Length: 223
Image 1: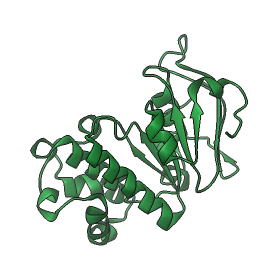
Image 2: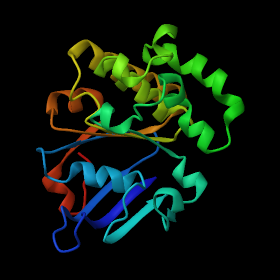
Image 3: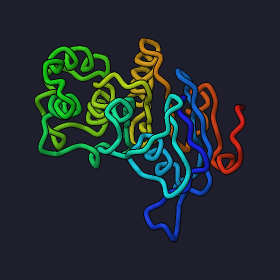
Image 4: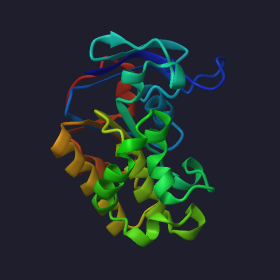
């Protein structure tokens, strides 16, 4: 279970962008978080993924309170999450070939021996052909780069996926392919999903339930 209780967070303690938000996801559940641009959805998603320390409130993972954030989180908690951001060019090191971009988390966690096998599994799963893997970000399209970012998010076999407007900058066919890749992974592993966005039609079709942003400041009820 992933639970966020009474979360207040921001980048300046005097002006939080998230106030007293509550959200809960059951294992294997897919939840859409719907809200307008600038309301704080991405900040809450980063808190849920243990990438941003909240100013107040608690995050609980499988009944255990989270006490560390980013690299100070325990390894089991830190590696339980895979995150895909809205803008792939801001989340990808421009110096890395796509193959190295995907393998980055494995190298960081001592899993170098797994790299060939995981690349062989993930590249076709996200729609990357072998010739693309040797290219750098400036040599591929936004959609191709986002495919690599999704593969990177999946490489450690996370139990929770956080997709923060993953498809917002993509054409319809690429967006559909990436959503299908996420769902194939979830079917195979039972991973939970938090999909953040402002496209209600997409979230309603993709997720088991959709939570509207304004409802997060009260005790969250399942819809």
